[in-house]
Length: 127
Image 1 (tube, rainbow, N blue to C red):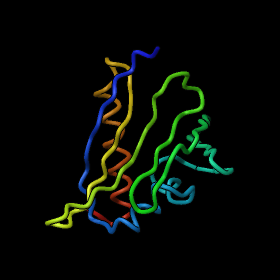
Image 2: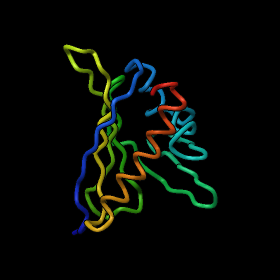
Image 3: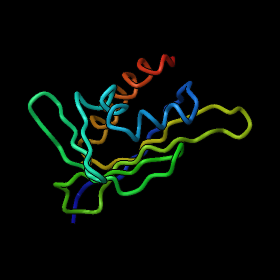
Image 4: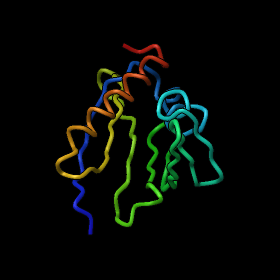
Protein backbone atom coordinates (compact mmCIF):
# COMPACT_ATOMS: atom_id res chain seq x y z
CA UNK A 1 0.00 0.00 0.00
CA UNK A 2 1.25 3.41 -0.94
CA UNK A 3 1.84 6.28 1.46
CA UNK A 4 0.84 8.71 -1.24
CA UNK A 5 -1.89 11.21 -0.52
CA UNK A 6 -4.41 12.52 -3.02
CA UNK A 7 -4.46 16.23 -3.74
CA UNK A 8 -6.52 18.42 -6.02
CA UNK A 9 -5.80 21.82 -7.48
CA UNK A 10 -7.79 24.07 -9.77
CA UNK A 11 -6.62 26.53 -12.40
CA UNK A 12 -8.80 28.98 -14.31
CA UNK A 13 -7.94 28.77 -18.00
CA UNK A 14 -9.23 31.15 -20.63
CA UNK A 15 -9.87 28.69 -23.42
CA UNK A 16 -12.69 26.75 -24.95
CA UNK A 17 -13.10 23.23 -23.49
CA UNK A 18 -12.63 21.78 -26.98
CA UNK A 19 -9.27 23.48 -27.55
CA UNK A 20 -8.06 22.77 -24.02
CA UNK A 21 -8.94 19.08 -24.38
CA UNK A 22 -6.64 18.78 -27.41
CA UNK A 23 -3.73 19.84 -25.19
CA UNK A 24 -4.65 17.26 -22.53
CA UNK A 25 -5.47 14.18 -24.59
CA UNK A 26 -3.19 14.16 -27.63
CA UNK A 27 0.54 13.45 -27.81
CA UNK A 28 1.12 16.60 -29.89
CA UNK A 29 -0.87 18.73 -27.42
CA UNK A 30 0.89 17.26 -24.36
CA UNK A 31 4.28 17.80 -26.06
CA UNK A 32 3.56 21.52 -26.13
CA UNK A 33 3.49 21.93 -22.34
CA UNK A 34 3.62 18.73 -20.27
CA UNK A 35 6.76 16.98 -21.50
CA UNK A 36 9.52 17.55 -24.05
CA UNK A 37 8.05 14.84 -26.24
CA UNK A 38 5.03 12.52 -26.01
CA UNK A 39 4.34 9.42 -28.06
CA UNK A 40 1.41 7.06 -27.87
CA UNK A 41 0.67 3.53 -28.93
CA UNK A 42 -2.98 2.86 -28.26
CA UNK A 43 -3.60 3.46 -24.55
CA UNK A 44 0.12 3.68 -23.68
CA UNK A 45 1.70 7.12 -23.64
CA UNK A 46 5.46 7.74 -23.39
CA UNK A 47 6.39 11.04 -21.73
CA UNK A 48 9.96 12.13 -22.41
CA UNK A 49 11.89 14.78 -20.47
CA UNK A 50 15.59 15.38 -21.18
CA UNK A 51 17.10 11.94 -20.55
CA UNK A 52 14.19 10.26 -18.81
CA UNK A 53 11.13 8.51 -20.14
CA UNK A 54 8.00 7.56 -18.23
CA UNK A 55 5.19 5.35 -19.48
CA UNK A 56 1.59 6.04 -18.54
CA UNK A 57 -1.57 4.20 -19.42
CA UNK A 58 -4.63 6.16 -20.48
CA UNK A 59 -7.24 4.79 -18.07
CA UNK A 60 -10.22 6.83 -19.14
CA UNK A 61 -11.18 9.84 -21.19
CA UNK A 62 -14.27 11.72 -22.22
CA UNK A 63 -14.05 14.12 -25.11
CA UNK A 64 -13.83 17.79 -24.05
CA UNK A 65 -14.17 16.78 -20.38
CA UNK A 66 -11.28 14.79 -18.86
CA UNK A 67 -8.32 12.44 -19.24
CA UNK A 68 -7.05 10.06 -16.58
CA UNK A 69 -3.61 8.40 -16.67
CA UNK A 70 -1.72 5.98 -14.41
CA UNK A 71 2.08 5.80 -14.40
CA UNK A 72 3.26 2.32 -15.42
CA UNK A 73 5.78 1.91 -12.59
CA UNK A 74 3.14 2.51 -9.91
CA UNK A 75 2.15 -0.56 -7.95
CA UNK A 76 -0.75 1.19 -6.28
CA UNK A 77 -4.04 2.76 -7.28
CA UNK A 78 -2.65 6.24 -7.91
CA UNK A 79 -3.36 8.18 -11.08
CA UNK A 80 -3.42 11.70 -12.37
CA UNK A 81 -6.49 13.24 -13.88
CA UNK A 82 -7.04 16.50 -15.74
CA UNK A 83 -10.69 17.51 -15.76
CA UNK A 84 -12.24 20.46 -17.58
CA UNK A 85 -14.99 22.17 -15.58
CA UNK A 86 -17.19 24.87 -17.12
CA UNK A 87 -19.08 27.11 -14.70
CA UNK A 88 -22.73 27.01 -15.77
CA UNK A 89 -23.37 30.65 -14.96
CA UNK A 90 -20.15 32.49 -15.86
CA UNK A 91 -18.98 29.96 -18.48
CA UNK A 92 -15.48 30.23 -16.94
CA UNK A 93 -13.31 27.24 -17.80
CA UNK A 94 -11.24 25.61 -15.06
CA UNK A 95 -8.76 22.79 -15.21
CA UNK A 96 -9.08 20.55 -12.18
CA UNK A 97 -6.01 18.41 -11.48
CA UNK A 98 -6.16 15.32 -9.27
CA UNK A 99 -2.82 13.70 -8.46
CA UNK A 100 -0.99 11.80 -5.73
CA UNK A 101 2.31 12.46 -3.97
CA UNK A 102 4.19 11.42 -0.86
CA UNK A 103 2.86 13.44 2.08
CA UNK A 104 6.05 15.49 2.39
CA UNK A 105 6.12 16.16 -1.37
CA UNK A 106 2.56 17.45 -1.92
CA UNK A 107 3.55 21.15 -1.92
CA UNK A 108 6.39 20.43 -4.34
CA UNK A 109 4.03 18.48 -6.61
CA UNK A 110 1.52 21.35 -6.55
CA UNK A 111 4.28 23.78 -7.52
CA UNK A 112 5.30 21.49 -10.38
CA UNK A 113 1.71 21.43 -11.64
CA UNK A 114 1.49 25.23 -11.30
CA UNK A 115 4.62 25.56 -13.47
CA UNK A 116 3.24 23.10 -16.02
CA UNK A 117 -0.12 24.87 -16.17
CA UNK A 118 1.68 28.19 -16.57
CA UNK A 119 3.34 26.70 -19.68
CA UNK A 120 -0.04 25.44 -20.88
CA UNK A 121 -1.61 28.89 -20.45
CA UNK A 122 1.25 30.41 -22.43
CA UNK A 123 0.71 27.93 -25.28
CA UNK A 124 -3.03 28.66 -25.23
CA UNK A 125 -2.50 32.42 -25.05
CA UNK A 126 -4.48 32.43 -21.78
CA UNK A 127 -3.67 34.72 -18.84
